[in-house]
Amino acid sequence: MIDPVSGKEYHEELIKTAVKTNSISYNALIELIKRGRVVLLEDGKILKRGYTTGTCAAAASKAAALLLVGKEVKQIEVTTPIGVKAEMKVESADKANCVACVRVDSGDYKGDTFNGMLICAKARRFPVFSIRAGKGIGIIKKVGLGKVGMPDIYPHILKNIEANVKEVLPGVEIEIFVPRGEEIAKNTVLPSVGIEGGIPIFGATGFVEPYTDGGYKHVIDFLVKDIKDVLGVSTGAASKRFAIEKQNFPENKIIIAGNFVLYAIERSKAEKKVIFTMPAKICDMLGINAHEHFDFEFSSVGELVERLKKTNYEKLKTFFGNLAKELSRKTDADVYVFDSSGDMLGCFLHELLF
Image (cartoon, rainbow, N blue to C red; front, top):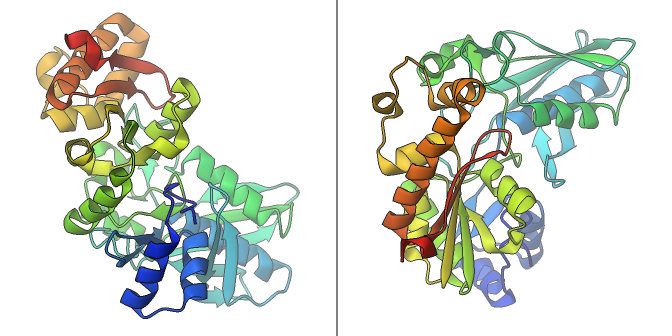
């Protein structure tokens, strides 16, 4: 049985152990695995995945479109960006105004600030499909995060919402809004990094991984255990995608470790290890303050990358090439650094150290 989100194979013996450990029926557990809702640990315990703000926005949008065509909605099924179906409860619905809301469920990731908030959508007839960002959606204010002045809804999420809504109606305008988005965002790092007025609508896979310090380390232990030849460790879904698309890295040999890349490398017994990361993440892993290495002001590593790509690309590649070498020396792994468009900013192969 393959986990459709991580690509990890769960052997029959582990599934049976999980059935006994969690007092769940075999068929019910299989269905949860197929839908990407759970992560199985080596001892048979289960961690629950949640749904991202992007998946919640897609669900609310599709439910609103159904209200527009006169259908009552209590449960809604959408297709996530990785093609896995997600079924969610419609928390509230206003038939008269064609407004539907879905509540964010972060599963067993206890550190998610967005858990429990409502994400809503309003639908109205329109000649073509259109999406608008309403109250509570963050606006990009700094270079390096996307187009300045635009709402922070990731491009692939916009496409995913459109695909789901068009299953109901091709000609519709969807307005997405988050009633408490601005209030909640004020208590996060979003304003300091350049997102103001609300939260982002994002999520690469559509699922929230259970990234708690103790819990996810157990997941990583399980994911790396059976990979003995070559292991790829990515900081997120974007760097994983670039590894597969740009470097032809085998998808079944790569795991997403989030903030636990160094832990995953340390725990792995694979003969060869490869790290795929983004600029800000490699700085974090090495404890590097990028501001100390450049003589001009910038608000984020993302802004630094965008500015130097236009003015001094060689200096940019030299900087991240050196960081790749340092991380390789620290971890005995090959290191690849990609920017947000998939361009390689730095690369170092561990064998070159000898």
